Image 1 (spheres, rainbow over the protein chains, first blue to last red):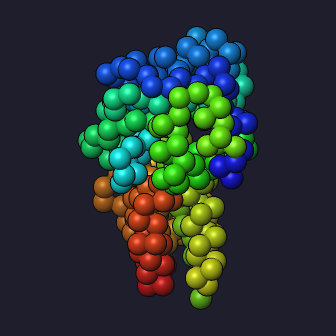
Image 2: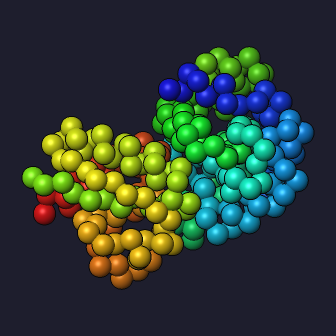
Length: 153
Length: 94
């Protein structure tokens, strides 16, 4: 399953080693990439940030790097796709299971979702990827698109 | 054992709950339990409880529900999956 994840991630929307201190900055950065590549509308970034505030998406994985999968309603999306960021220093997201709990996130998959079948497929592929410690460390060490493709292909 | 009805909840009631519903339904089938799965938003759980034996959610649920519930990210993160499945099985065999 993880093999196909690369097919959903736009190479234009992969940012490695992002150096920032807030989840808002990461979400805006990736949303801009998706916007530039034609996946989402102008309203997307704000809508993701608003959703994250009430329905957070931080996923604690129990090892060094945790993951977040921010997304929002289909109204803000033009076509389905995923943006990916690896972070130089972790930023804080809230835990999906318990919004009062902070999760230090080092890997962010920003999802543009508006097709029910594809969004389930995309989510399933992301989940399969993050359940592999090897894939996570491979992504965190990636310094080029080829490195990312080698992990996700 | 008769069919058990499980309500799967997540933020939107579509994507995450589908992934979890598929994982749980498949795993319970292997353990000999057939699940009739339903899905909804976590905020709408209260109005969907009719005939439900168990709620499995990835986000916080309203308190004081009349049906047993399990909130877990295990089917997304892979962490603690066996324990979560054991809990679900135990609840469904009651």
